[in-house]
Length: 243
Image 1 (cartoon, rainbow, N blue to C red):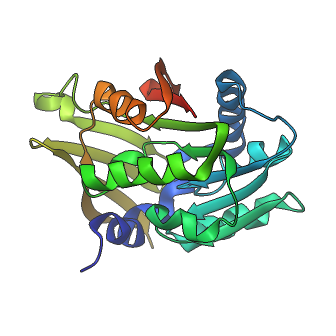
Image 2 (cartoon, one colour; image 1 turned 180 degrees about the vertical axis):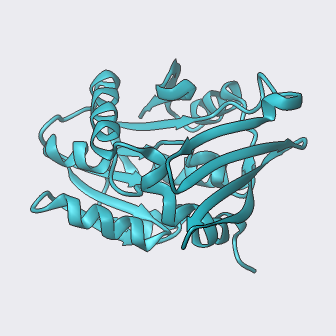
């Protein structure tokens, strides 16, 4: 069975993802500033893994800081974009499920990132816990696991507030609609595109996990991390966990 998140990216979101972000260089600069605020270890040395790397918003700043970066994503065209932007930077791109990242790592690493709401794309809590176990096993002592994700638990959107404008230009309009259930929020992406002078409608949806920030911190703490919650970019929760 096809993973609904993978299918959604292939069908709709992946081809417009960089466009959705807007100014890619500005977004990368914001990511660089966020990494500065995190306080990464061994600046200028070490190995870092970027889970859900996409077009390299975090991989590029990591590599510019001197890390050997393994950039993992399951959507190859975005990694191809990253490869074209990386030049001679020490970044290895891998098309893979992020839960299997350890098969692509030969030795313990210093930094693992799982940012930009990637965590909520996993299929269930057991998968989240499996990722936390893998991260704990892969990091060196003193290594850092950084996560950012949206809190779909603490403040559920109601009524018309569930309709969210994302981005538009003269040829595209992207909005989304959120539909809540107990464990997930179904994200319905609504994309209007102008093709040959006609507006076409494309629809696709996928589930995101509703993860309590308190649960994430607790789950990491039980695995030997010292974890703290902060406010991340664009209203996301940021959790910094150190081994």
